[in-house]
Image 1 (tube, helix red, strand yellow):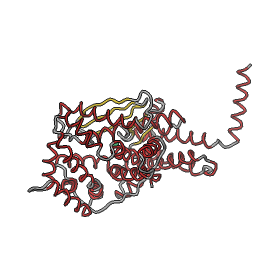
Image 2 (spheres, helix red, strand yellow):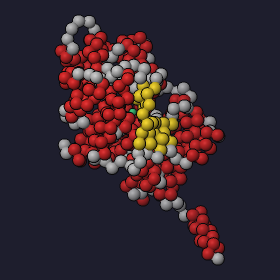
Image 3 (cartoon, rainbow, N blue to C red):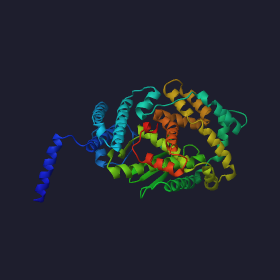
Image 4 (cartoon, protein in one colour):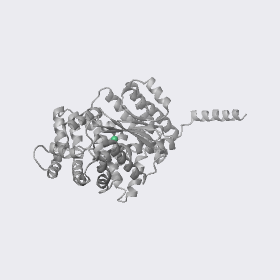
Length: 429
Ligand SMILES: [Zn+2]
C-alpha cells in the first residue's frame, strides 16, 4: 500500500515536471551532467585532454565506448550554451550564477578545443582567450633587457650570460640519490604550512614518482578520493629551488590541495558533477597554475623559504647551506624573466620565428641551458598557449589574494575560497 501511494506521488510529480519548468538547480545539474559527458567524449578524441576524472565510472565508460564526432560534439556544446543563456538569471542564487558562468565558460572552451583537435589554428592571443578565457598581456622581449643587466652584476664574468648562470646553478643540483629525500622533505613542509591554515580533507594523500621522457618538470595527477600521484621528471638535473617550487605547486597548497578541496566541497558537498572532470585546456587551468605558483610565496613568505632551504634542504642534498642566500638572490632576479617565456611562445607558435631562433631566444632571455630550452620548446609545441597560465596566472592570483590585506590569515582564507570554488580568470580581475 505504502508502495502504491509512493508510486502515485511520483506519477503526480512527473506530471507536474512535464508542465512546469525545472527549478534552476535541477536544470544546472542536468546541464552539468551533459557537460561532463561532452568533455569525456572530447577526451576520447584527444589523449591528455582529460587531466582528471573522479565522477561516476559508468559515464566515462559510456563516453569512451561511443564518442560522438567532433562536429556533433560542437553542436551539443552550442545547445548547452543556449540552454544556459535561456535560464532566468534573476531567479538564480549567487552561487548558482557562479556555477552557470563556470559552465558557460568551460563549454565554450570545450567547443573551441574540438576545433583545435581538427587542426584549426588562430593567433596565440586569440587562442588563449578562447581556450583559457584569458586576455594575454604580452610585452616585447626588449622589456627584459634591464633584468638581464641586473643579473649580469650577480653573475659577473666572460662569455654569454646564459652559460654563466647555468654554470652558477650547476653548483646547486640535487644529486639523484638524494632527490627522493629532498623532495619528500620539501613537500612535507609545504603540506604542514598549508595545513596550518586550511583544513585538508581527511585521508588526503599523494604518491611520489620519478619519471623520464616528459616535456614537463612535474605533474600532479589527481585520482579522486583526495589522492594524487605526483610525478617529477628527471630528464634534466634538478636544482635545489625546484624542491619547494614543485612541492607547493603540485602538492600543497597547489594542484593536489585544489582538487581535493573541490572534490570535498563541491562534488561531495553539493553534488556538482562538473568539477569531477578536469579538462586540461580550460579556464580552470589559469586559476590552478596561478594558485600553484603563487602558493610558494604564500606558504613561504619573506625570507622563510631561503631559511628553510638552507636549514633543511641544502644539508639533505649535501649542499653547503652558506651558499643558499646567493642562490636565492639569483632565483629572485630570474623570476623577473618569467613572462619572457610567453612572448617567445607567442612568436614561435604564431610563426614569427623558427625553432632555432626560439631556442636561441629562450637561452638568452630565460638564461637556461640549450637542453632546458629544447625541453621547454617541446612543452610549447604540445601545450601551446597554455604557457600563459604560469606567469600570468601567478600574477592574477597574487593580486587577487593580496587584496585581502597583509594579514597571513586573511590571505590564506582568500586562498581557501579560490582553491575550493568554481572560479574563472575573469573573477580575478
Ligand atoms: Zn601545474
